[in-house]
Length: 116
Image (cartoon, rainbow, N blue to C red; front, side, top):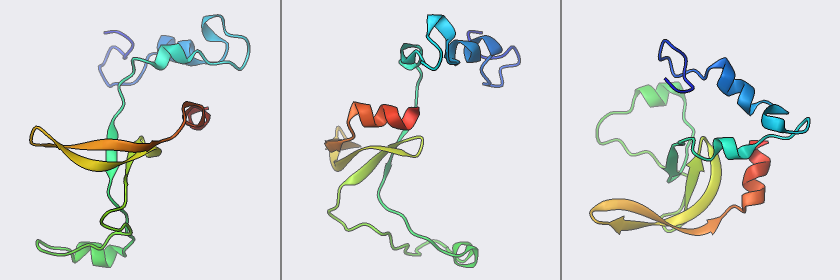
């Protein structure tokens, strides 16, 4: 196993955490070597809208129920990584699957600020 523990729980080993800690790999104090993270897979999701409802209303949902969202039909959709907005785009069809054409991308410096 590479940097996961021996039991295969998906938890990073102490060695992996040490590599990500400030000052590791020859860093100076509070610097983090982001090159170590470049090959880490992340899950992207596209958010079409949100709404709030009580648990009572949530439990009353059944097949055919309509849930009204806070976004207009033609508004750009949010591209999220771990709950953080990184871009907005419009839905496209790619070989029978959904895709997202990005029309507004958060700058790399702003994305890094959210990581730190």
